[in-house]
Length: 345
Image (cartoon, rainbow, N blue to C red; front, side):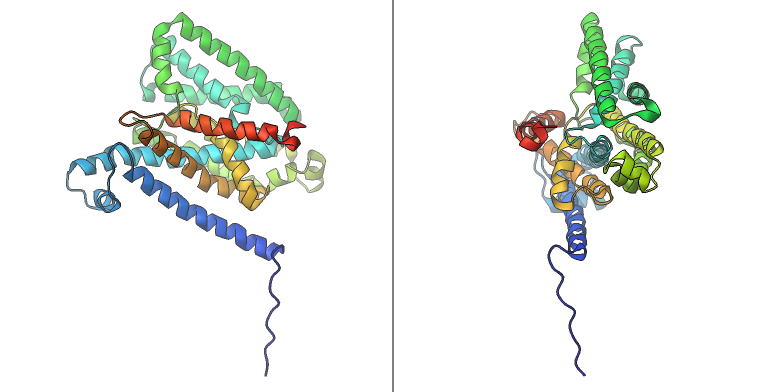
């Protein structure tokens, strides 16, 4: 008895696309593991991977053990969590607003957090990270609520959200600059937070905001299907049974939790939420059910690699990761705005 083999799957069929996307997720896991290893091993002092492993599983009190466990491990874990948060927030914002140049800062989250921190430092005299952590979170939430309200609240549209975000950002950064010029000690303290860095951050800060990051990530991933419908347009989304206003409000909450908590820990780190979704779409397409997991895996890789570059490019000094991502993001932004399709939006 002969058995007829199944016909091969054509490259463009849904089954083959799903296989390729799944392979991309597996590759993302492998690349993330490599990025973590790179972050633990590379810096002002290079440490072989076997010694990194020994420091993690069986420390013996050597200098390398202290470097890995006390300095680089917290930095790496924070980079993974913050990178995933910023990647997810960027993907949600670009899908929600149907704007390929949208960034989590569009909702005023970074500006709100910065305004709250500069107020805590300049007016209340709070200078410790643990002290103004909750100010940053509260400022991010209030700014996002203000942008959503100015953008129309339940009737907000992508264009109105973008305009409201631009207005709130301008107003808040004007306040920040004014307070810094009025109080020079505030300017000196603020610059250590506003540069955007993974260095000298205690793991306790991450543990404090971890529940918020997890809640924001779960909410964002749970909104993948409604966001995919909204990306087709509000009318199409309603026809598919999506509660557009509720989904949009929950998406704003997710971005606020993700970006607000990340900004509170590391300061404002820009362009990660812009770059990674664009790169991910080239492999997985615009479907948020695939785009969001891709961004959660690949955004931490970008942040960790940028941090390593900042450590080694001008030894023995370091360039903060926010500066590196701003440089890379600026190059991408120039490329995007020069593209005819984007320039005509």
